Length: 239
Image (cartoon, rainbow, N blue to C red; front, side, top):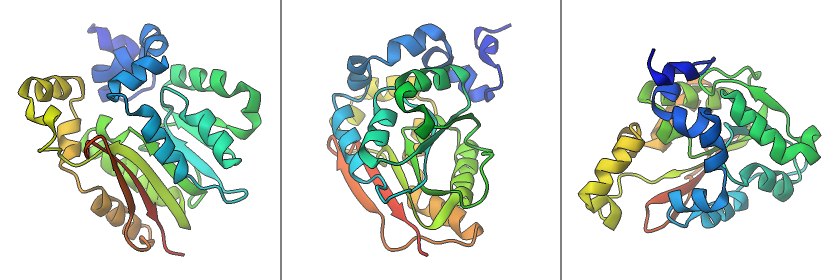
C-alpha cells in the first residue's frame, strides 16, 4: 500500500495522493495552521488577501453564506465577525472540520459544519446568497473544477454573488514565474495549478450558471495583489 492510500477515508483520490501531507495528516494540519507559515506560503500577502476578501463579503442582514472547504488561518472567524451572518462551512476532510470547529466554538450556532465534497454538495438548489471560495480551485484537477463550478451555480440564488480568491491568470511577467526553478517547484507542489492558470474563470462560471438558468450581472469586480500574482473576484448574479 502506498502511503497516501492510508488517507483515503472518504476523500477524493487526488486529494489523498497529492495533498495528504498538507490537509489530511495530523502533523500537517497542526503545522500549516500557524499564521506565519500561511503568510510565508502566500509570500507575505495573506492579510492583504484576507482584507480584500472580507471587503467583498455579503453583509446584508440574514444573508446565507457558504464557505466551500475549510482553509488554514483566520478566514472563517473573520467572516463571522465582519458580516454578522451565519457562515455554512463544508469540507470533505474530517480533520479540517475539527480544526474549523476549534476556531469557531464560541459562535458554533452561527457556523454549521458539514462533511461534503465540493463536487457534489448536499444543499438544496438556490440555498445561499454568497458562495466564498478561498484558494481551492488551483488544487482541483480540471474535471473536479468543472463539477465544483456546476455545484456553485446550482446552490447560489439569483441576485447572489460568488467570491473567489485565487492565483491570477498565468503570471508570465512576474519575477517568480520567470524563475524556472520556482516554476518547477510550484508545479511539483501544486500539480493542478498550471492548468488552473490557463482557465478562464469568468467563462467557466458563466457556462455553469447558464446551465442552471442563471446569469452574471455586469462585469466581475476584480482586484489583483502581489504584482498580479493573486486576484480576488466577486461575481454578481442577475435577479
